[in-house]
Image (tube, rainbow, N blue to C red; front, side, top):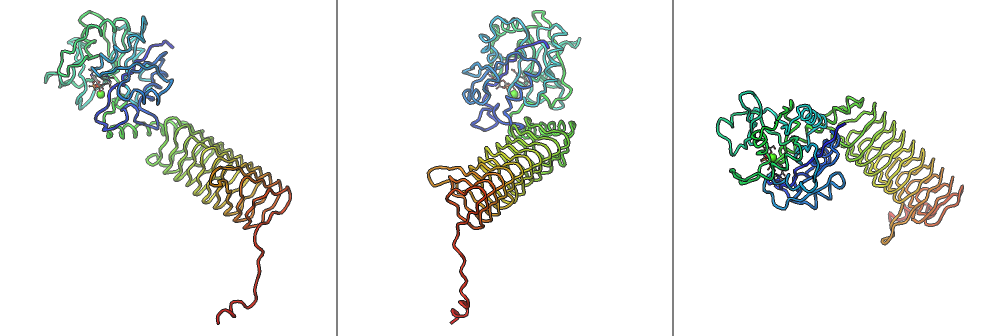
Length: 455
Ligand code: UD1
Ligand code: CA
């Protein structure tokens, strides 16, 4: 695949978002808008990405990390000025520069790949990605000559009524040959209604020089939707979510009700898993095949094996094996590992613990900071007492131990392999393997006591 350099404009504040967060960091499909743009550019063949930042620069850099290089535009003097800030980063580069905006999260690598291919095939100095819109609003208009060739781009504030009537708009996405672009930028003026250095003026300059300007029209204007407000953010969220669900359905996942299922762009699910309604799958969650997920389940950054069932539950940063049953009403907190065949159910919270193969925590328990072996049975209401008010301590429950109902295991403590704990015990000392541990007051019955006390 031939390669280009992407320059992404993201220095603006995004005033209409009414937000302290830079516009490009607002999330769609669980990731910042800018991250979607960078991913599409990379997939389409960008060898380097250079992002121009300004408002909230430090926050943008921190959120995006190594996915891009960054240059600063201290004052937002217009899109042409913004691209100029990348000049040093571009150096003597003689190839193609693709200019993108950080606020168009619905772009696909396929569209960008087609733009680059069209640009190369035409041998153009500039290729503009355009779209046709019934209501072109505040977009710049693409003005063509009688022969249908692009003549210039005019901003709506500077346009005549005849120009405003044109419904072909500039999406703000282009390919340029790098050196002619840098030369043209040096000659830009800000002689326009907004007093800005317009990148769009480069198009007219190229035409005047006799350089070839080409255009590609996107068939689906939703792909190039720019987000300027929270309303548009919600619109984009819906489109992206639908796209993800359709991708999953096409790959063999059953989504019972797409309207009530929310799956982030980065989630993967294998074939023959069924996702029930009111389910949120977030971040880097990965789900195997043959699972049943939901209803009413939220999984964040959680890995599920094959043939596992989880319903009415919430898990974050957990690893769950094959053939596991979780729910209803389970909270699995970070660093919880459930081995194959485990069963966790009915009002149970587990944190920073391992539950071994085929072990069961079926009812009303809190398990924290615990290493549990295989084949363990935890009776209803068992609590690991992991916190002494100052420090957390670990509980070890070895293979095949049987913990009676309503037991407190006061950590640090070890319950030996194959041992048995009497119901209602508060265990403060280690229990040896194969022993019975009981720690509760003996029962006494006083005959006739009630009748005597009736007085
Ligand atoms: C721009 C185009 C317009 C096009 C529209 C598509 C120009 C002059 N106009 O207009 O033809 O239809 O995009 O959305 O280019 N930015 C900077 N620094 C600046 C100014 C802008 O980084 O000094 C960034 C913004 O953060 C944004 C992008 O560039 O991501 C576009 O800027 P914006 O002000 O939204 O341009 P429009 O007026 O919408
Ligand atoms: Ca815009």
